[in-house]
Amino acid sequence: MDNVTHSLTAVLLARAGLGRVSAGGLGILLLASNLPDADSVVALFGGGLGYLEYHRHLTHALVVAPLLGLLAGLAFFRVAGWRLGPAWLLGTLGVWAHILLDLLNNYGVRIWLPFRADWVGWDLFMVVDPWVMLVLLLSVGAPLLGRLVGGEIGGRASVSPGRGWAVFGLLFIVLWAGGRWVLHERAMETLRARNYEGQAAVRVAAWPTMWNPFVWQGYVSAEPFWGLYRVDLNREFDPERGAIYYKPEDLAAVNAARRTPEGQAFLGFAQFAVWRVVPAAEGVLVEATDVRFGAPEDGKFQLRVVLDEGRKVVSAKFGFGDPLKVR
Image 1 (cartoon, one colour):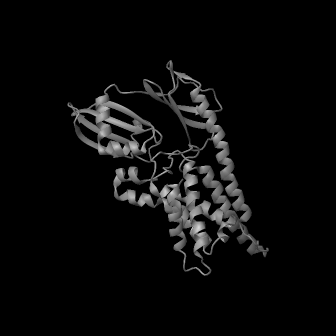
Image 2: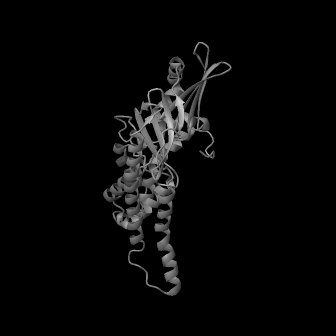
Image 3: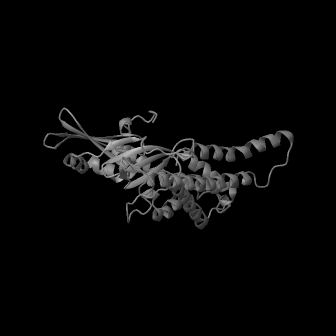
């Protein structure tokens, strides 16, 4: 999830009661809930390939969480009443909360590092989920507004300001995830139950869209092609209405692109790569797109490798494309 969502969740966790675990509780939770994304800073120095190799890497691993939690706790050692044990526990809980939220979206997390590099993700939320963001902003802001209004009219301050709203906001995340899970399973079953141009699906996936929880981006891999479909659970699904991308026959070109350092980094991150081989002035252009982030023609999150006639690499690069381009 985005760092605003992580930070708002940390505030609600603190108000709900976790902030009492340690002196400086709110600060520890805020730092711990954002500390795993320090890998993005490392990735910035490595450019696009650095992002692919290090984003959601060791700092998002379950076994590393206690170490990051310790760092978050130690950052507040000067706070009066601070003790190592409670601060360490609270910091670790904050890191685990970050990892749990990241598991909910369609990026996934490599939680088993350094033992295994498998991606784990539940494809329920977008990285920036507008409904979650709005409810969390309301849950954090409403008590502040209430105290302001109460102060103006001489009302009595709450002993535990914001706890009710905090519980409401956290409960919303749980219920929203549960509802999304049910809808995601319906979308997956819809995709599995159809044939596509006479072909059975070998692999399917469904990813959330921005505003409507009933509309999903569907992915199908069949023997000769990949397909992208709009799955609206309120309407009849038509498997004939989708974008089809036939799998390239020039496997030598695809394999040559895979072997490049850029190709290896891309494949270590991409989970739903769609490949295309098209003629180029030098020979052929091999494109691979992780279609979680856009269709191949959008040019987003794309590997591009140019090969000569002998299938030798002329150039290779990875690009994010235009992040403002509407899908």
